[in-house]
Amino acid sequence: MLTDLTIKNVAIIDTLHISFNAGLTVLTGETGAGKSIIIDAVGLIMGNRASGDLIRSGEEEAVVEALFDISDHPHIRELLSAAGFECETELLIKRSLPRSGKNKIFINGCMATLALLSDIAPRLINIYGQHDSQTLLKPENHLRLLDTFAGIGDQRQQFTNQFVQLASVREQLSGLEHAEREAERRLDLLSYQSEEIAKAALKPGEEQQLEEQRQLLAHAEKLQSVSGEAFDRLYGGDGTLLGQLKRISNSIIELSTIDHSLQDTAAALEGAYLQLEDASITLRDYSSRIESDPAALQQIDDRLDHIGRLKKKYGSTAEEILAYKAGIDEELKLLRGREQSKQDLEAEQVRLSEELHHLGRELTAARRCAATKLKHALENEAHQLAMKGAIIEPTLEPLAEPRSSGFERVEFLFSPNPGEIPRPLAKIASGGELSRLMLAIKQVLPDSDVPTLVFDEVDTGIGGATSELVGRKLKNVAARQQVLCITHLPQVAACANHQLRVEKLITNGRTTTRILDLSHDERTRELARMLAGATITDSALNHAAEMLAAGATI
Image (cartoon, rainbow, N blue to C red; front, side, top):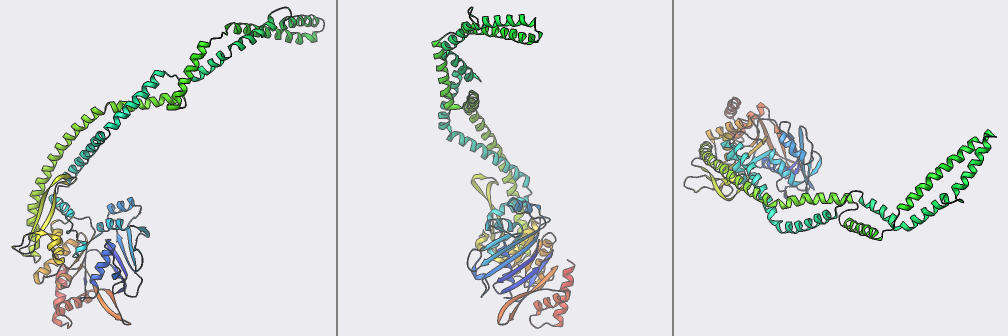
């Protein structure tokens, strides 16, 4: 709900602050006092196009601020949160219009875009009466109104869900068809790569083993000759190292029987002999096993070269190459199964399309039935609101292709006078007629998630009993939503919960506007003025008091 509105330097308004309450609030005052300027200021908060002509003469910037209580509207908080604006209970929207430069928009003190404002503001407040702010002038809203009246929200959501599923399947099919040629090329490439890696029969760790084998074969002669020579010097004859060590060891053992302190030395020499003896035997066996094999060496070189080429293509190790093959094998499985996937998708497309058409036919039938009932209900309300003979025709126009909302486009056609062909509202309805049509809709479709409604020109061309009926209907709407109404009719004003008087003053040669929150006695005098004009009589005051008393009982 709109709680506060501050206007600075807009037209004849220098500074104006208005506090609003729940229920029905009327704005009254002489013609030209600035009531419409207040509505224009609210339009700026709604994202309406800004003109430099709105800036007060002699000022460089116009500013409008609106404070909303959104504590009971979680959907608005969610929308703001998605856009990066965290709000709990209060929402402050500010729009500044500098005479030079681009206008600026702030939401809770942070810069925002006009697109975001234009998306959020209509969820906060709607204006009825000015053509550039009319919900009714946008045919895309007519379908929502009809569906709300018909009570087919669940059916429509089911159709929308089916439509989205069908669109997804069609998109997948289209993607398959467009990718068919590329898929064939991809299939050929991946098949070749998978086969090439498979033929190589790689094993983890194989390359390291081959490198070690290659090292042995490449130095086989050296390994054999050096190990054989080492064995000969250690063990091969009388002058070998082991023979000399054996004689030394025996001598020291003999000495240790005389001097026991040499026993450890004797034991060490004997241990060294045994170790060298083992080493010499190992060298002998090793030398006998080493053989030069150029053919085996060539095979290993060829294998390592093959692995090297695969590494340049598919990975730095055998493990990476095998992992790459596993990945392309999975892709190959999908590519080879695309024909089956295509057949499955085509079957799903047929099934979803049939279900969508079934749901669409049911939706259309429900809308046609509801359109007839809505026509009668709206016309009955319109006739009560001084539009005798008016025709309101909700029309269903079949679409060449279905949309997420159904198989038809809905638009309300209107004829204000008998004998005239109903035409689109934007081309024929006046501001006052649009306001009363919206008031009629609010009687027929009371539920709405827009917290604040502004009616301007709703009393144009009416009077007497009709004006009192308009006031009653406005108050009926205000029991559920905040309603602001500009009116010149005392019968409408008498039904309000609150009344604000807009006045035009001349101070120091400048025209400005002020607003007064009227007390009960002040309301009586204001209603008397609206009844009698400049000269307020006792009769007018008594009549005004009676009207206020009657309005309070509604």
